[in-house]
Amino acid sequence: MSSLPTMPVGVDRHIADTAHMTNEEAGAYFRLQIFAWRSPGCCLPDDDARFARMLGTTLKRWAVLKPIVLANWTLENGNWSNQQVAREHQFVSEKVERKRAAGRKGGRPKPLELHDQEGALGSAIEEETESKTKAAKAKAKSTPIVPTGDEDPEGFAEFKAAYPKRSSVFPTTLARKRWLEARRRGATPAEIIAGTKAYAAEQERIGKAGTEFVKTADSWLHQQRWRDYAAKAVEAAPTAEISTDVWRERVKAWKARGGHWPWQQRTEPPDDPRTKVPAQVLAEIGIVHGNGADRAAQFRRVG
Image (cartoon, rainbow, N blue to C red; front, side):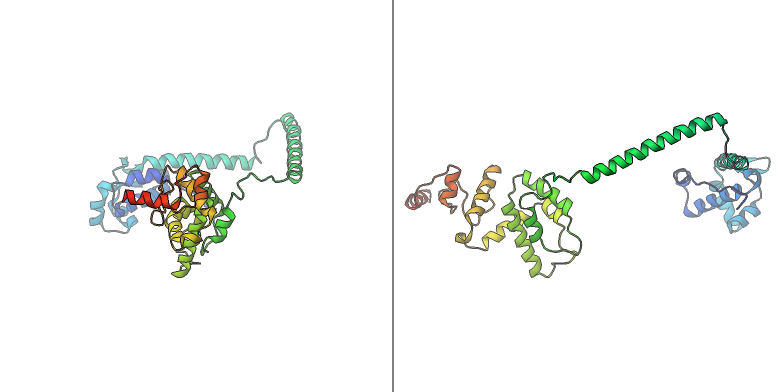
């Protein structure tokens, strides 16, 4: 074991002290601190030739570096000292000596009566802790795990199954959180899943499925990307092929969003007499536009 204590390095303080220095100046400054730490009294003799040898440089170069490197050093009685190094050396040396003294004495002995009291108290605490631990384990074994209701929100399992495979594991926890956020914003499971299936088909078509180029499910939900794909998925199919449930979900979303209708390219919104939304779905929310002849006549009047 080295007789010299290890020199601590305060990184933040060192950076602050050398922030104005070049890399060469900062390296020289730190190297001299190390030499001072290993020298008696944490001092270095005022000898430029010796300084140059310590730093592996020439006297001419040392003359250029000296004003900056020794700016935080003090010259006293022919020796240069650094206050930070001296203070740290004293603190560490005293700490090491205290530990050595305690080791020679076999630790710090206490009165025997205190040993007895502390031993009794320690035994009681250990017994109490052990009892609590056993009780906690027994409770954990006997208490069933009760679902909180967020394990499988409505439609989430279908979304997870439909989402295109990626090169990494599906982020179930984060994706579930984003799914619930989307539902609170008014998105329906049907529209999210429709967009998901369209996105999966696109990734398969362009050869990105199963790679790291597929967006993570949580990011995809957070960015509400189903809106980009849900409309495309339905536009690709004739209106007659759209199920009543999908129409119903869309109309509910339309009401929740204050009249925003993302299927404008497919058909007019529900409150427009020309809409192709099934009459039975419109009737469920109290909208009645009349028969087909009335719609055609109204369309001619508008035209």
